[in-house]
Length: 303
Image 1 (cartoon, rainbow, N blue to C red):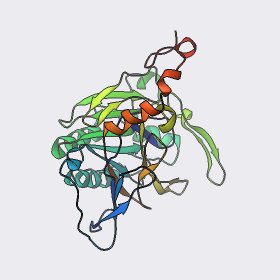
Image 2 (cartoon, one colour):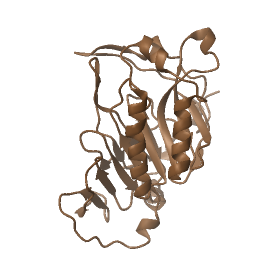
Image 3 (cartoon, rainbow, N blue to C red):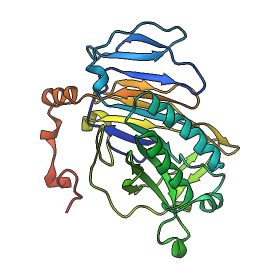
Image 4 (tube, rainbow, N blue to C red):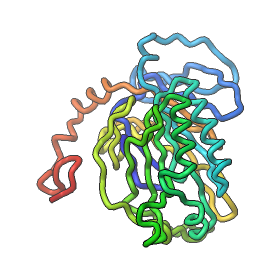
């Protein structure tokens, strides 16, 4: 999985959703309908529909890892945000997911940099403790897309880190990555958003981490790196100064959107299969075109 540095935290899986996805907003009954796939042969998609229909699938399909992408509307209220995220994570666990992705700023979105700093916590604080307990309770891994972290240098800098946290199914922190490229933008109609006003760029990259659904890396696009992108996004209006676009999705290495969240908070799920990825890399050997003489070896910074 690869975490891209964008307005929504994005992850890539080294596997392909073979069976498809389920879209389920909270508080709605889940009914499943087998739908035709998009462009990729033998791809089936599970869609939320008003009427249920029998679905015939091989038992082996259901043995593939299932990942969940959660779409939320964070506000300055951290406890309400946690309740929303916890509901989606529990639903993902009930549906059989082994790994759930939450978007950047899953913990909160503040009204201004001063409020951001006031609401931030260290990794050992109460909020992350609630998520570690949630991971243990549900028995699944959590990708926490961007946590407002007070680091060890908080007293000196009075600034925070945008920290991606990966928890295993026992609630242990197995990896952290502090965002290195910050988001400073001018959005017409919404005013400026300067992440660097309150956030310090991370000091380093991290090594890949094995999860039940594949390895996590740090940065990627789908086609050019032949990875599956899992993009968990914020949606809706967070407060009077900010709104987000939503459209959380899973994209395959050929650029096909194989799962997409509906409007508003909800989740989508995708099954994962490495065979398609190996086949694609044989037909399109992009890794042979790398230039380590220009930018170093894969996974290591240039010398």
